[in-house]
Image 1 (cartoon, rainbow, N blue to C red):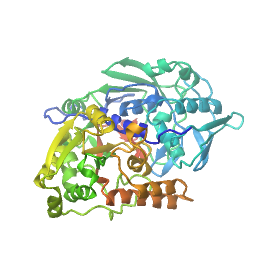
Image 2 (cartoon, rainbow, N blue to C red):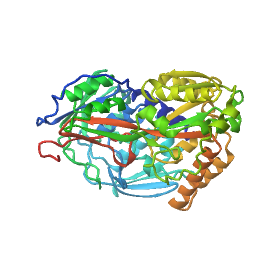
Image 3 (cartoon, rainbow, N blue to C red):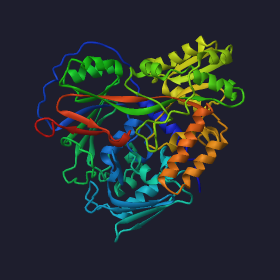
Image 4 (cartoon, rainbow, N blue to C red):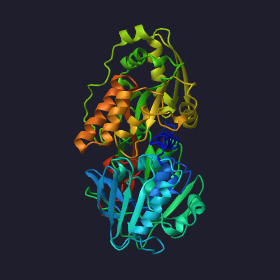
Length: 525
């Protein structure tokens, strides 16, 4: 049986952004937190999670918390995948086999055998999890376990070369037998013995604070090749702090150790040499057109005209004050297969754009996370109006944006699509432009008709090697861009402010693997 590869992924990528948006601005705050005091606790910010079941994660905080308690078979590193629960693996486009590391146990002492892993992955494949289609290529895998050999094997009916890479995402974290026996309890919070990973949830103040304690018996840290400085915290307190001005004050005052901030708050750390502010490339912003009947963008000439107006540098300054990465394709430069070649981008030509767009009525629907309070959306409205178009802007919260763009195909013409590419593959955004639409069970956001893209994507799935696969994917992405089905804009940044003695790392372009460490007091600073 096959499922849509994209439907769940498109909704998940959009919905995950709902809980990453914050308002900005504000002054004040001292630097009382500039001195490190020895501690075994990290206090970090988080948005409100929707579930504690890793298989059902929908928003970024769900995935970040899942990473604390549930280990995956592999993990991302700067040089590629490294061992997690699996010591080694072999794969083909239709299969993967993992040999487990010795000694891994659940939090109640249950050995993590091949059968334990199989049962968890079977539960994931049969769940309604939003990342499931991207994990298994829209298929239900056949999973077998050999406890004596310590191996787990997965087989697919049709090629999906991203299977091993997808099994690094936190939603594929292994749930131990106690958790599988109580899925309702798992979604609600801690189930004793459910955890395969390092931390156990010990306290919850809904909407306020979520506390995790390190297991005394845990030894299965990933075999990273990159240096991860410092020591794991004994306790991690995830604090809900939705106002970025207040968040910045709390870091400067020493009441928070690691916190997400917006670009406009970075200046407040400029004269605070003891603090570290680190941007990590995060979501990929592209303009996506509604190409269904009734929208002006059925016409490729009009889509091209919009592309001719875009100044990516100016858009990047407007939205992220230059902290993001200017796009050359549909994903960031950290993504597998990306060459940096920008030849497919449609050159700016304001005069030609104005001639084509004069009098065109455009309904622009976009989420407020595109810059503070949707500043990027307002910028797009202004340049389109300057070119003579009549633009109605709906600058809306993420929930409304998801509902409108994904479920109301007659209600919009143009959107800024913010894609969270958890798997980290160039294949992920391509599937947003092929096959049936969202309401038909597919993932084609704008109803694009792109047979050449479909051909190239199919070719990538059966390619003989990675070079050929990457070649086909780049050609498909270039066709999307050159034919103005989408206009790449920027990859924005997830910006962490870190108090002295504390550090956060996101390796290999991973969006859901935030590694928190204490580096003060001689532990790595």
